[in-house]
Every structure is written in structure tokens, then in C-alpha cells.
Length: 87
Image (cartoon, rainbow, N blue to C red):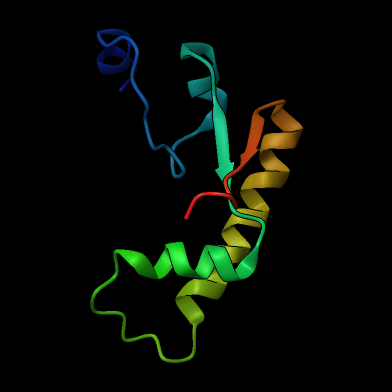
């Protein structure tokens, strides 16, 4: 993975499930979050045409994951940007 990243320049990599300790030495890291729960849900559902999770378990999991990512980002000194203004 590092070799592929090093071969690129000026790119954005969605890496929520990759090791931030390994990635931060390869470039600037930013965690993009949506604090407003209603906005987050709207964005979460936007590209999910067939969501059969009627109890919102997938969305609840996404909210919990975001909390964990925020905590980890703060611990690692990763910049956190809130995108609640994005429609």
C-alpha cells in the first residue's frame, strides 16, 4: 500500500479502515466528520439505494464508528474537519 501511495501526488485517499499510524508518515491526514446527527443520516443514506436496515442499526454503527475515529484522531493529532455545512 505504501508503495502505491508514494507513487502518487496530490490525491485524497479514503482510509477509515486503514492504520492511521502507518499512514500519517506518508502525508497529511484529515478526519472529515458530520457532528449533526440528522445531516449525517441524510449523507449516510444518500448513496444507499437498497438499505434494508429498518431499525437504523447500520447508521447507529456509523455514528459509533465516527466517535471512535474522532477519539483516535485526537490522540494522534490528526486534523478534524466538520462538514455539517455540506448539503
